[in-house]
Amino acid sequence: MHKVDHLRNISIIAHVDHGKTTLVDHLLKQAGTFQSHQKVEDRVMDSGDLERERGITILAKNTSVRIGERKINIVDTPGHADFGGEVERIMGMVDGALLLVDAAEGPLPQTRFVLKKALGQGKRVILVINKVDRPDARIDEVVNHAFDLFIELGATEEQADFPIIYACAREGWCTLERGDVDALVKKEKKGTLMPLFDEVIRVIPAPVVNDGDDLQMLVSNLAYSEYVGRLLIGRITAGTVKRNQRIVRKNATQTTQFNATRLYTYEGLKQVEVDNLYAGDIGVIAGIEEIEIGDSIVGTVDTPALPRIDVEKPTLGMIFSVNTSPLSGKEGEAIQSRKLRERLLKEVRSNPALRFEETAQSDQFRVLGRGELQFAILIEQMRREGFEFMIGKPTVLYGTDEDGSKTEPMERAVLDLPQWAVGDVTAMFQGRKGLLTKYEGGGEEAGRVRLEFDIPTRGLLGIRSKFLTNTKGEGLFSTILLGFGPHKGDLAHRSNGALIADRTGQTVEYALLTLEERGVLFFGPQVDVYEGMIIGEHAKENDLNVNPCKEKKLTNIRSAGAEFLVRLAGLRDMSLEHCIEWIDEDEWIEVTPKSVRMRKKVLAGNLRSVKREERVN
Image (cartoon, rainbow, N blue to C red):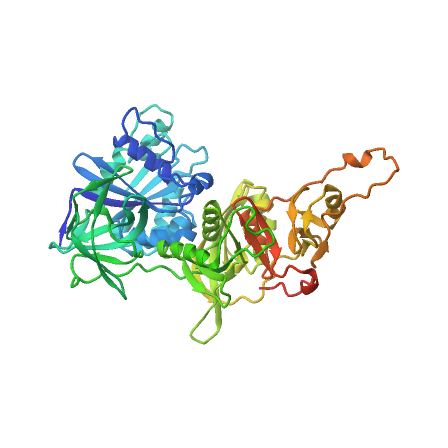
């Protein structure tokens, strides 16, 4: 085995919104990746529409910079635990990582999740304290928290002796000297990101590759090109590959030979076509369509395959169904079960954190994943592709221990919130079987408080929006999977029933005004409804069938016109995430490119009960 000294492969670990995508922007600019006249968007690595809208990284992406004779491959990893499958496979492509931590918030759960993976695989880590210019920055305290986290996660002595870089990614500077931070923040000194490049080359080891010319590469990611088809992305751990060379794809059940029709490497944000790929580099190969993440690409049939990527088990399941509502096909493509199945299988092939299962119903399929956000992203992507379909309530995947007792996934929720909201939030989490394990802050200065709860995954379903309401939008909420623990018993979901349309038609303002006192409405006037469609939340625990289409009877008596001044008091806007949190087992969410509606699984009012005693999961 030997080292490839001119290469460095690193990933960037950070919690959501701690500035890693902004840091990559400035790394690319200062390394001379872009021409002086070239217009560059902010957050250039968040290329997807959903990523830009939500301000989070969903898919891991590759880029590279050149510093002198050396090339640094950078992988931007997601910061959310729901996209853990992305993180698991990226760690196998790199030799070290930058741990990016907010100077005020400190290490948060998703930081912990990804860092644990990196340390467990023996990666060297450089700590970058970002946003040191924040007025509420507590730099020294955050450094101590980070050191404690390294020790808690079982870092070796070498890993725990990490270099510390103080940075302001937004302004594009960093320093190794704690004493220089104030001068740089006040702009008394000028700085660049060169100290960070120097530390990467000094601390992160060069890739170690196997001797010999026999190719070995693990497929860590997939992409698609309109011109050359499926693209396989991964790190070459041994050998070389030439264009049009005959190579082999291997997995547990298949061995397939194919020609490497195109080879690419990363230069900046572009994939540049090359004639050869060499060991140690992160490369892209085209030439085969049927491939899965985790497969090995090798030089000959006799070359052994590499170990497959190991991803933690899913914790939630969700049913996807063909749309059977009366409005099916009016706002999008009403897909058949075959097409829905193909689309879900395509997603599962490119995301190892998702699993696919058939159900007893031929038009319904079950997808297993890691969290509500992961499902919401998949659903939103399918909507934007023009599909119409239905989804059910997420269900927790239970297990059994050695004694045969029922177990369920447990999560640690870390909450950062104003002190005045602690009482309401604590009561809410304890009502969902949450156990308070940590309380930080408070005291004489009534500022912000950090709480940690150990809570069942099913207790978190539907809690995010209630938490934001209780903290008036000022709370930060993040979770990480702890593993499986003893079943905590029955847990009530929502306590209110639904207001359900009892006929097909268009909603009328006159009818909705009479229904306002019955609960909270989700729709205004002139909206198409059908029997069994949910139009609001009932003020009581039972369901109520109502007529939202009732028009005022005309008479020959003149009116003073006072009733025309009466307007609907207010509607609750139900986003996709709100609907996923709100529905029960006997309800569907109908998703189309234009609308998100909720309905009962049984549409006919005379075939379903309005009693809600069974709403316990």
